[in-house]
Each structure stands twice: as structure tokens, then as C-alpha cells.
Amino acid sequence: MRRIAGQRPYGGDDGPSAAELLLEETRRAEDLQEGAGTALDQVAGITTGFAGVVVSVLAGGDGWPTLIAAVLAALSAVCGVRAMAIRTTATLRPVALLERFEGTPRAEAEVAVLATAALLHEDRAERLRKKRWWFSTAGGLLVGAIAVLLLTLTLDAVNADHEATAPTEQIGPTPDEEVDG
Image (cartoon, rainbow, N blue to C red; front, side, top):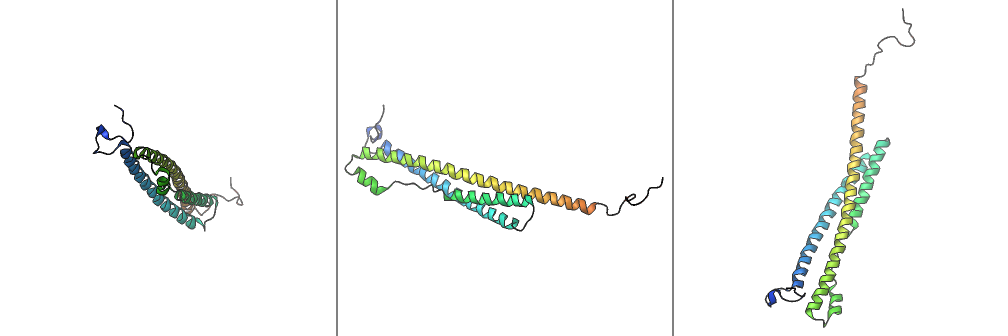
């Protein structure tokens, strides 16, 4: 048997309506989305701060690899700030709802509020998707900056080690000397 929104389950008056249950579930989903948005803001802030540290460390460096790493870290910071700038909070406006549904039967108002809450849920989900994309981009750029930095340091260390162990004496004749023979 199909129930109409607003009708009590099993035809009784003691339980919540289907619309009330769906609205409650929508509120729980909203809380989860808000928590996810807050968590992303926190890690995006940490990523942005770390990118700033990497840029400041590389500021005095020279060479193309250092410049590339600094640019990647700076872009990471920009993407992290962009991720934090996306707000995921979207709520119902109670005054507007009150004005719109004054005198409307409860079941009809519940369905309308539920529909609006569902639209807001979808809007928050889209904003969270964008926030995640910007955060992922920031993280990828920061990893790239650190990889370039580590590669540069490793190559510099290998070159310095190679130069330190290279013989300093000329073995064999120099181009100025004659070879007997």
C-alpha cells in the first residue's frame, strides 16, 4: 500500500509522518556534509600553511628546479585558499518559509520544506565536490613541489659527492707534455 506524504505510518497518529522522517534524515545528511566541509577547511589550511613554508624556504634558492618547486608550492597555496573559500553552508530561511506557508496544511508544508531541503542538500554536495577538487589539486601541487625539491637536493648531493671523490691529480700525461715512444 502506498502512503501519501504527511500520512502517519500504518495509519496511526503516534509516529512521525514520512515527510518528517525524510526531513530528519536530510538534517542528518546536512550535519555530515557540514562536518566534511569543516574537515576539508582544516586540512586545506594546513596544506596552505605548509606550502607557504616551502615557498619561504625556497625563496633564497637559485636555479630552475628551485624556481619550479617554488611556483608549484605557491600554486598549491592558492588552490588551498580557494578550497577554503568555498562555503558549504546552505540553510532554509525560516522567515521566508513562514511567510510562504502560513495557513497551508501541515502535510503540504512538510513536502515543500522537504523538497527545498533536498535541493539544498544537492547544492551542498556540489560545493563539497568543488572543495574536494581544489584541495586535491593543492595537495598534488604540493607533492610535486616537494618531489622537485627532493630530486634537486639528491642530484646536488650526488654531484657534490662525485666532485669530492674525483681525483685531483692528473694521471697520465697532460696535453702539454710529450709522450715518449
